[in-house]
Length: 464
Image (cartoon, rainbow, N blue to C red; front, side):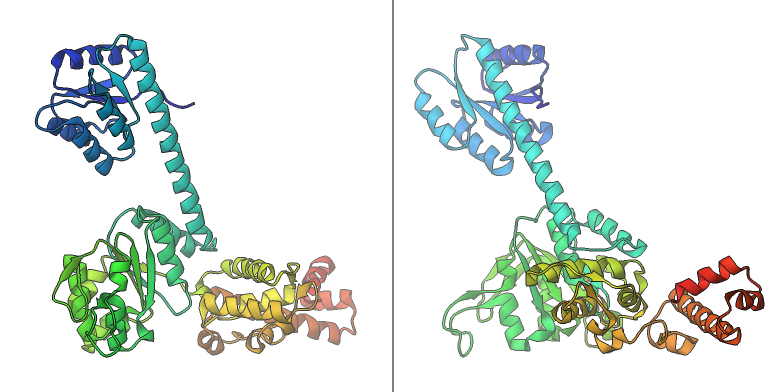
């Protein structure tokens, strides 16, 4: 049910009007505060945080229209009802055009009309708040939908995103290539109060020093050969939004100094200009290398590192995300099938086993590419081993890596997965050998294994 009880601020230089409205509004259940002039009214706006303001147009020092403009500038969600005496109705109409909800004419002949107008303003305010909450829920859901995963490491990342998103602190995202650093950055932005502002991403390793400086900071006409006009940089483009600096470790020392100024002072200067401009943005940086090692090598500024490393997020490699491999595989199958306009195929057990056994040195990006390839090559209703890239498709139960500690470590398999694979390989070889020695006699093979026939048969069925 939409709320019709709220916090009302009355701003009027006449004490009789303030007292009269306070009594009437309080009797109706509202919480009321008052101010005798515009300056005090704006102060109360910050302290009391009203839902609705009843504002007189004619006041000394600061008139109602100026106060209205200030309210709508700082608290646009607050509804303002203008109060006007005879002869100032034209001003009240102007106020409506400036964002006022409605206006009332003094003296008040009918208090019921005043209370009804306040009630309607509160209903509008309440509906706007519900819309804001719904928009926030939808935005957060969109943000998390980009991050597929149900493993403990991913739950930790999602919880951290929710915690850090509302702040404006700089974030450093660390993780191997392909772990989804830009997706996390976008999820942070979509969950923040900057969600409706620009998100600008740049790969710092993809450009030369000169081009990178021009891209980030912009340039003025004539700053260098080919600079035929003034051009804003990405820092200016991202003003009031978020900028994502991928591969931050590759930024040259000369640009590191300028980036430090952006973080410290919120100022940018275009190439070839002496004029600085203020920018309000959130910086999210990403790296796949140890920046502390870069500092030891003299290739990265220590003061810049600490400015970037206010909040640190470590993204887990795919090999440490267990159950997420199958979830991601199904997600990408649906994604690329839809893109290709074809029926969504299933993934065969053998193919899924191979996906889960592989070490994924290229992480999520490698898995995405493997599934895209499989969708293109698959001509049946199920993705099979031969549809997967050779290095993955060869990883069936008869040809598994990780059957010894050295191979498992080289393939980047976690201990538990390597142990399970070795156990499965042992079981398969043991059962097959016993059946051969027993000429296929299930009961004889079970006796030699020291197991009852039903349990032995269950093990055999696993590998048939």
